[in-house]
Image (cartoon, one colour):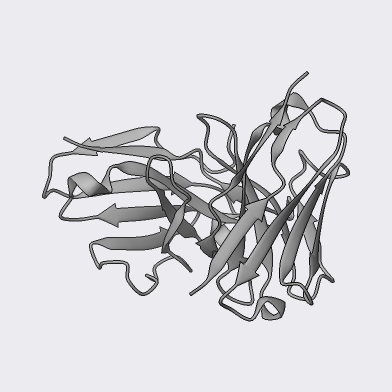
Length: 120
Length: 110
């Protein structure tokens, strides 16, 4: 069965960095694009970034472009989100998600999320 | 302010039908596939509808999706108390080159 397990969340001061990981199992990780989606406390879903199956193509939400980077290690079945110059408004639960198909229009499996709190 | 517009809340009695709208533009819904997600309290989102009107295996046919022009609609029939959740539409925006979610709709079954 497909499993996505995020880790790396925690409390961090504004301006600092954090790296999130998403360990994937139960499917051929190297064959699927992957998303990061976040949800601020009490708010709606906010799309963050997507990476192609081979890591060649990435897209980012305007709000995080230049500060967050997405990457993957297909040999380790792991997706990453490097978060730099963190802001208060980056506080959220961060979910990783598997693209349902080659076009990545939808996310068919989600992790349980990891909480990032940016606070001084 | 979300690129996709959903009503903040809808409600209906058990057994009835409800629809949730999602309004966008030609750069997003008008030219890309729409998906819908259900998020029960305290849990991760779950895919309900993909590619405008397709249900993943295991999703009951009480849930349906449709798209017309720059709007999409999620329909739920035979409402159950277990359907109480937040529902989100999602698509790609070709102008932003980014994924976009609607603001979410809270469904109350009363």
